Length: 451
Image (cartoon, rainbow, N blue to C red; front, side, top):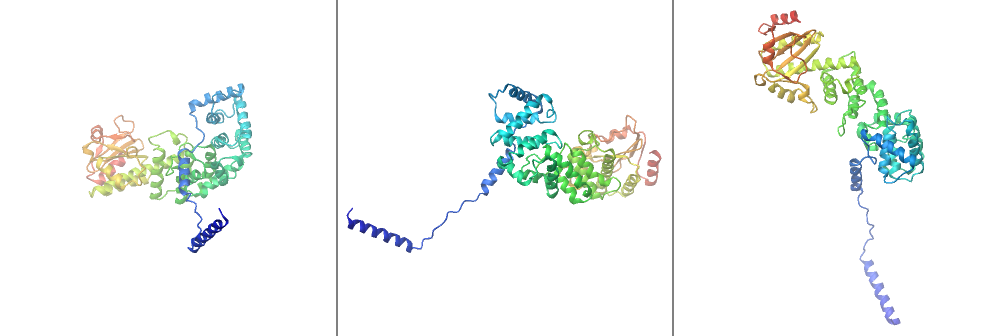
């Protein structure tokens, strides 16, 4: 290119640049897209796959532990994955094996690997083993905590977030109290523990240990509705399973304020219906939390359930029957209850009354009608029964014109309480001692004479 041509080209370039600048075009910095969608996807992944370690079935744990013992002894690491090694750690450090002398070399292997293995799945998995097997004062808990604390800066994001929320994580002497304090401060402890990184709040050893302190500190306030709501949020979470293992002391704490005083009807209904919906009716089930339950507090709940069932029956008849003879009958039975003469009560609703009870008497949708009440099948379901134990007598009363029948409790023909199905005509035919209600004074006197 000649000098003249080069000069002309440079002139054209300068003219183009001046034209572009004269348009006033702004210089824009490209904004980063929102990260909210990415955060949601990460949260969904963590919710769907919360644990890096697969928890082995109880039946497989001994096999896993003994396999690890063989591999450590023979130093044979062929055909094994990191996933299997960390799953085996759950077995080695569980209640049955954590103190076994023959597995001592395996435990030492894990401590050494925690100290030397590069950051990644194994190290993060062992944090899960520590949390799951956590036992206050136990040697294995102390050793795992010390080993993991030395590597805490190298953990994955999930556990780093947990440490941020719970700095005491690897200080066994302090972490249970700290976690219990977090639970007390949260409105919904179950949801909050999931949010900070404890994916299975009810089942891990650490949460179980903190739960004991949480309940003890909450117990003095359980006479108040707000404290009860906070405890129920933990025991029966909206987005989680009902706590079963270890729930007994919590239910005892809920009942303890009422050992020597009576709650309002609303409080009694709230407590009794929520408790039996979550942990079954102690009149029907002897296992679960009821097997070792405080006998006095169990008796408190049984008194409430007796009152509840009598109220359900009386409220149903009051609302659906306008006979002038019903109110004095109702008042008579409720006075016997107030005088502590009625020991137990159970209702068998007919189909019509059952529908009414479901729509008008029960609160919430957790109550299982098939377990909460019996079903009366005769007379097209038009008759409902109130079955009571008064001392050594079984007393059956019914709505409408159904007579009152009294049996000795040891009579083989006497209807049993807490059955799922009854036939009122069979009871009537089996009875040799009955009385109609056509004269309330004579009827009430007859009942008192025969019970």
